[in-house]
Amino acid sequence: MKKLSLITISFLFINFIVAQEKFTVPELSTQQKTDILYNHVIAYAVAGISFAKTQGVTPESYGKYIGKKFIPYWNPEAGFHVFVKGILDILSGINSNNEMQIISQSEKMIRFKLKNVDLSFQKGPMLGVTYNEYLECSYGIISLLAEHMNVKFSHKISEGIWYEATFEKK
Image 1 (cartoon, rainbow, N blue to C red):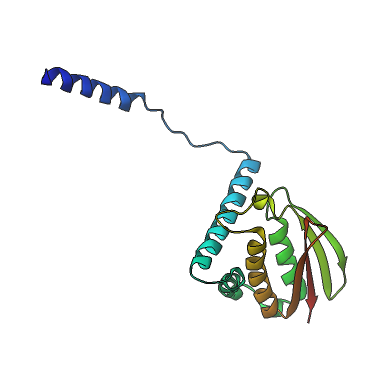
Image 2: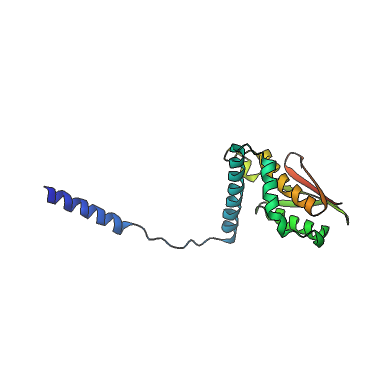
């Protein structure tokens, strides 16, 4: 009886191993890759904010911590236009469904708005982090970089759905 049980278990185990599907390298479209990357970046950012909150750190303070890590990559001597171009590139690429519109600009100022920044938060908080907390963290990062680059930065939500940002050369 023991032999029969052992043979039956061995047979089932071997069939289980042999029957497993072989893995293949996924073939993803550029859009799928972009969406996956966007979702991971947002999830990592939100997980960081969530952890910071458990440590008694505000989302804005956590953002300033991140901003301090980024400062070495921003050269104030490069000037206002290089900074604004870099920020525009980063924010316009924030997700594939993003809409960006420049509202006004001059040699010393730009105001633009983005739609769909809240994409990951449309069903409510993510990992215990609200959209406003996410924006507070973003403000912490961008305001610190702007200060480093001698630029004044402000932001707000306009028309209920647009994230509006203003950069002014000091």
